[in-house]
Length: 78
Image (cartoon, rainbow, N blue to C red; front, side, top):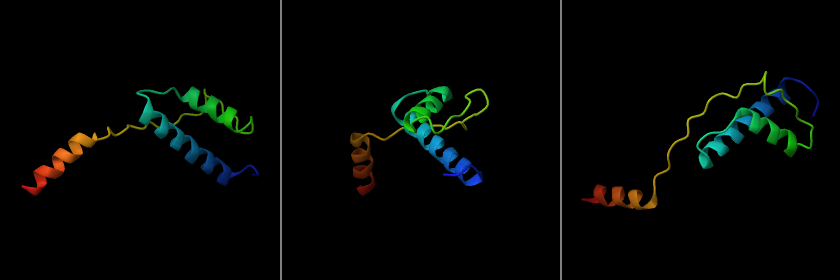
């Protein structure tokens, strides 16, 4: 893909999704780790400087356990 605004936007979307995925499975993630993984996954085609590129903060939502979801459902029926 040629350099430009569209490529930059797609990379930003990809990095944001990677951070969301990381935070779903891990408590914290370092931006440098995501940038390094993106470089590795792209075969070196996407190189970002971790010192200059800041990934926006993402606060993960705790998932509701199945037991609690069932409990809430039964309470609504009463």
